[in-house]
Amino acid sequence: EPEVTQTPSHQVTQMGQEVILRCVPISNHLYFYWYRQILGQKVEFLVSFYNNEISEKSEIFDDQFSVERPDGSNFTLKIRSTKLEDSAMYFCASTRGGQGSDGYTFGSGTRLTVV
Amino acid sequence: QKEVEQDPGPLSVPEGAIVSLNCTYSNSAFQYFMWYRQYSRKGPELLMYTYSSGNKEDGRFTAQVDKSSKYISLFIRDSQPSDSATYLCALSWGKLQFGAGTQVVVTP
Image (cartoon, rainbow over all chains, first blue to last red; front, side, top):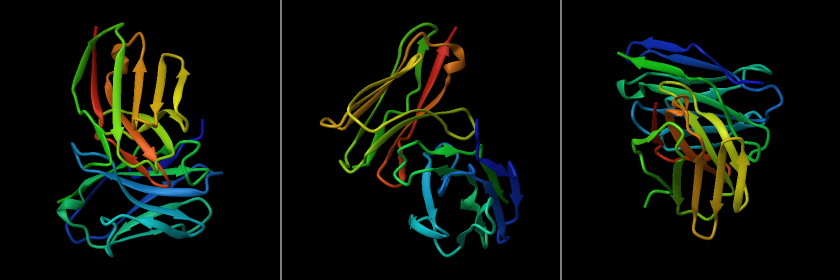
C-alpha cells in the first residue's frame, strides 16, 4: 500500500533555530498538505499546495512558515525561527483530487520539540 | 459555533459491543466525509470516506451520512481491544477540517 513518508520522526531544536520537516507524498498524488496537532488538541490545517504553489493557508501559517517542493518527490515545511508554541506533531498529507474525493493519506508525523 | 463538533469521550465499551461515534457540522459546503483512526503520537489512518448521504459498509465498519441533519456516524461492530484508539471525523470541501476526536477504549 502506498504511503506518505515523513522525516525525521522526532526533532528537538532550540528556540529561534530554523527547522525543515520533510515529506515524500504518494507518487501519483497532486495535492499536498501540512497539518499540525498540538498535544491533546485537534488536528489543524496549515497549508495546501498544488501545481508548485500554495493554494490555501490558515492563519497559523504566518511569515515564519514556508513550503517548497524542491524536486519531483519531496515536499518540505520550513519554520524560520522556532518558538516554544511551535512544539507539536506535524503531519504531511496528500491526495489525488483536490476535494479529497479519494481521502487524504497522512504520514506518521514529525514530533517537533522546541526547547 | 465550531464547524465540526465531536464528543471527545472517553467512550468505554466491552469487547464485542458496537461502538457508535458521531459528529455534527454546521457548514453545508462540506462535500466529503471521512473517518480516521489515530493511535497515540501517530498519524491519522483513513478508515472510511464517502460523499453522499446514506450508509457505507467496509467489514466491521459502517459510516452514515445525513446531509439534511448535518450529522455523520461511524459504527464499529464486534469491537476488539485493538480498536482502542482516537477516532476523528474529518470533512472536506477543499481542505480537511477535523473534529476533536473521540477516545475509544475497548475492554477485554
